[in-house]
Length: 283
Image (cartoon, rainbow, N blue to C red):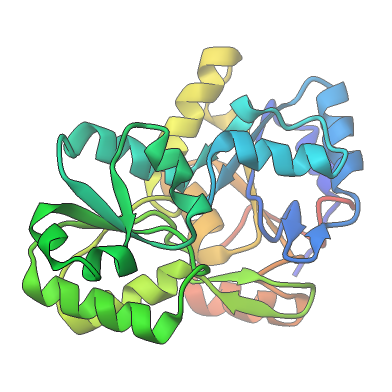
C-alpha cells in the first residue's frame, strides 16, 4: 500500500470534492491540519466543494459549523449534501400532506424552510387521525429519539400505510473519534427496510446523482472537465466507489472509517481501489 502526500496530489487538480466526516472533522471536532490545507488550496485557486452525506442540517448551518471553528474557506455555496438531494425530491414530488421524520427537530428545519410540512414520528403516532394525511417518511438523523421505540413505531407505521420512505443519509457509520465508529442513520434505515420488505429511496454517496449535481455546480463556476476533479473521502463503499462510478479520481484518507491497519485488506477484498491513499489531508 503506497501512501502519498495529499498536498502534492491536490496540486494536479482544479476542483476538489471533500467528504466532511472523517476527512475534515469527526465527532471530536476539526481534524488537525484541516484549516491549513483548506487555506493553502484556496490560496492556489483550487475550487473546493464539500460533498457530504449529511441530512442533519442545511448548507447554511453546515458552513456555520466551520466558521465557528475559525475556518472561513467553506462558505454556504460550497456545500452539496444528501439532505439537499432529498429535500429537492420532496419539494418536486410532495404537493400536499405531512412528511413524518426520524431525527432531531433541528434536522427537519431545512425541510420546513422549503415549505414542506413535517412532523416528528412520535407526534404523528400520538394523533392517529394524522396517519391518513401522511405523504411520506424520511430518515434524517440517528439522534433525537429512542432507537428501539422509534424503530418499532416506524415498522408498525409501514405495515399500515404505503407511503414512500426516503433515506436522506445512506451512511452506515461515521467516525466518532480517531479510533471509534458510531452507527449512522443509514444502518437504521437498512434494518427497517429488510424487516418490512419495502424498498426505500436513498440519496447521497455512492449514488451518481449527487456527484453529477456537484460536478454541474463546479462547471458553472470554473472551466473544468472530469479529469480536473478529485474526490477525497474516508469510506470505500460511499466516497471511493461513488467517485469510481462517476468516473473521477479519488483519494482515500485514513482518518475516518478506514483505518490504516485495515485499508489494504479492505481494498483487496472489496475490489474498490482509490486512485491514491493518504494518511490525512494534512500530509
